[in-house]
Amino acid sequence: MTAHIRPDLATIPAYVPGRDHPGATKLASNETTFGPLPAAAKAIAEAAELANRYPDNHAVELRTALAAFLGVPVERVAAGCGSVALCQELVQITCSSPADEVVFAWRSFEAYPIVTQVGNATAVPVPLTPELTHDLDSMAAAVTEHTRLIFVCNPNNPTGTAHGRAALERFLDAIPARVLVVLDEAYFEYLRLTPQDHPNGVEIARDRPNVVVLRTFSKAYGLAGLRVGYAVGDPAVITALMKVHIPFSVNRVAQAAAIASLEARPELLDRTGALIAERDRVRDALVTAGYPVPPSEANFVWLALGEHNVAFSEAAAEAGVLVRPYGGDGVRVTTGDPHENDRFLRFATDPAVKARFAA
Ligand SMILES: *Cc1c(COP(=O)(O)O)cnc(C)c1O
Image 1 (tube, rainbow, N blue to C red):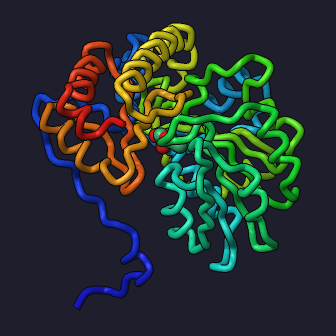
Image 2 (image 1 turned 30 degrees about the vertical axis):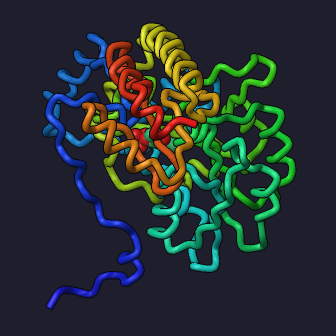
């Protein structure tokens, strides 16, 4: 007989590895197509030579570098094993009973409901607006005396939509100070809203102790395989995060690569500029072809295909392009290299495909 396992875990889907498609173009995971810069590769190799030694559990050098870059004291910065680990840790530091509620938009990052359930708290999903943005008024209205945590994914994964600073500040003004609000900025580097309305969570959180910002080295910095993200917020929140942190989970190689990548930031962010041009080119072509695609502020676009999402994704896979279907809602397509995007667009704008899926 097998050991007792928490019965509620049965409702969390077990991981099913994706089918292997040799030679396929992978536009399904919002990864950067470039390998690490030479400086990062060198830091990785050097750190690997010390693999017999534990990493710095407090990631002091990395956090100090981040603090200098962000213009905040180091006490305001925590590192995590990817920002997804920090999402889970944020539930752990705020929720302690199934009565505790975590509010998030839906559809949004698929980790939010999972980390909420794993943390034994209750998820309160709030539908997106018809424009596929966070419905901030409804999210504020969903706050009860039981609300402990709110995730705001800006730009939103998987729809790519973003709110500007004014809308976020109005929302935050409506939230009680006892509720922790997470601004998940995994795609911050791809935002191109006007400077006056640019939503920089680190600035927004400066004088709001109940706001914490998450960023990651996985997307624009191209280190998804090494797992390092960070949180910026009130020192009391950061101290609590460090208490629940799985010891040594931000490994030595990840810390070294993140520091080197931060130093090489200008070069990495140049790539980001080129990617944004590609993203907009892909969206324009899809809109011209008749697909419903909201403006994106991230490194992907969203095709609001509703129930046709699975059929579209399967047809794309047959054409050699892997995209990401989301049950009942749509398909997310990561922006890759120009030739990869062309391959996808050849598929999506093919007359037979358009006839099936575009309006
Ligand atoms: C990719 C992503 C993350 C984090 O990724 P890590 O690799 O764990 O740092 C966090 N939030 C959102 C919304 C994401 O899309």
